[in-house]
Image (cartoon, rainbow, N blue to C red; front, side, top):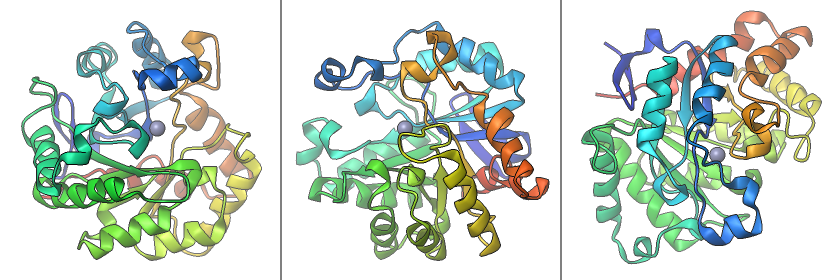
Length: 307
Ligand SMILES: [Zn+2]
């Protein structure tokens, strides 16, 4: 049986349904970040249930929660929201980016970091038996620091040993190609690599190159017009489909801010991709079966566990 790993256990990929591949349900960034930008603290424990209800009403079934421990991952709150709404929640181990790494990461070896990630995938996170279903690694704006590179190397070892895929953070969409090249050098099967935030840097050549190398990419920028208009992203996606990459793209919204959530009085909310963006892709000429791949078939392959 082909499965993906949720915080409540392994689930047959046929049960995955409509999936948002890079989201956040509860976060607590480092204090200096909260002080600069309090909107990034998404910590009301009652709201994930409300947002997941918005998601299920729009047909949502599975959500990949990409908050690692260095960004305030909260396993009990995710579990509660998943149980109350029936949404499959995939949680992440690993780390976000250098600025947020806990001090000890600097001193840990690649093997020690890998052991930590493997333990979270195979045994459980934060003293619970809820397991991580994906491994996060990330890099800074236009560079991969030596410590970030160390985390990537550990993530590759952990992915190979545990069967979980790697999903990444690209600061403002930069360094995606370099991330893929790095994991390839470390011997990872590129189809186990998912590059996030590419839409923040709407660059056709770079997106194509990452997929040519064999990785998946996530457009998690629809609605965030401060980075790129939806029109630009629709055009890029259509062009990349014409180039034959329809099986390597996914769609999400990466809503790690209060102002993105309806329950905090903001928007667009967890129904934006299913109710607005996918219909728009179809309205703009993408065949329906192709538009659906980004939230059904492609996540079902990308987040599937390897034995
Ligand atoms: Zn994110």
